Length: 551
Figure (cartoon, rainbow, N blue to C red):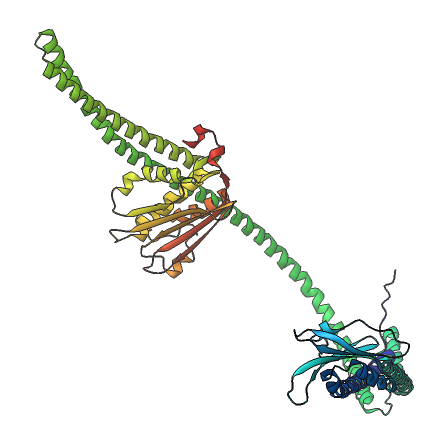
């Protein structure tokens, strides 16, 4: 099936371009002229109406002052001699300032119109609507210039419309005549240009069919076309020489192609082997990275276990001491009882000491239970990525309690700004690990050589479906080169000092993958750092939750 495409010929192009330019120019010129005539007709009508309004206004002053409405109405009958005036009203101002109908004129065969006194502001200038023109002008006393009334004129614009119609018809007739003359001249022009070009096209078609580049075109006397023909003949000569050189080069290319295919095959095999080695290297790198991240998690959990174990030993030790003291006092009390030397004062003293020791035991055991509960919750969260409902402020308290062994060694202050009624459903484990890594990052890196640092953690709902965590510290900040790569793996300033460079990379993966959120960082040298974490959550109303789920 042959794909047939229609091309625009030079003949058609010349006709269309010349006719389009000529027609457009004529239309623009005619439109401007017609527009000027129409405006002139309308301005003439407006001027005539204003003159008539001024004349009638001056003639009506005396009759309005003398309250001679009948005389004024008789005078208005002279308007019958003015063909374009159809209606005229004279309104007199009453003492309260309201205009009242005073006299009128209605052209024969024209129906009266209702009062237009309330439209004095709207018709202050002549308004032409369709075939009608209306205007209201004020009437002033000649001596004092006091406003005493209004004159309303309604005129016919049919004469203007007739003049406009005649102008349109004349303009169209002249436009059509000019277009016809231009078309005839354009046809003669295109014949003079296209005939030599047609001969050149026939020659090109013959060369294309016969592949005979020895033919040459003849000059025809038109300067521009002769230049084209000479260039075309020169192209034929160069083409003829090029074909010969191409035939000689084809044999050489065939020989080169054979050797090139062999080289490509060898390079392809080498590239496949290199790709296979690269894939294996990347797989090993990913395994090593996952192993390093897991080691980082377990190391953090191990440090937490050691710290919490040390923290729990203190209340348990106090409880053991208090219970031992009670056992000693109980032995003394039993001996006195058996010897029948027990005194009331001794018994009272034992009871008081027992209450004090039991309170000490209770408080310390309760303290140990809280520590263990917090550690258990944090440990479970660190190894679990399942959704659960929790209070965000309590989660932060549990995180800080689990980090208490490390925080006790420094004098830094951590401020939590979170609504106690903020309950959400999300993955507590990733949040736990993120906050621990950010706090430890500030303590180790941000507060290096700083004795008292401040960390502000602000948690708030950005909308009903997203939560925003803003983590700030007033440490030494992050240098520009390091800030651009802060979330890349193995980037650390503590290499060789125990730093793996995976802490912030782990934070980035937890935020973007586990929580489906985003994290950004802003920092300047000696001006601290600010991390902003945004991720989707489901907010839960505490009043709709079971009471057991609030603890």
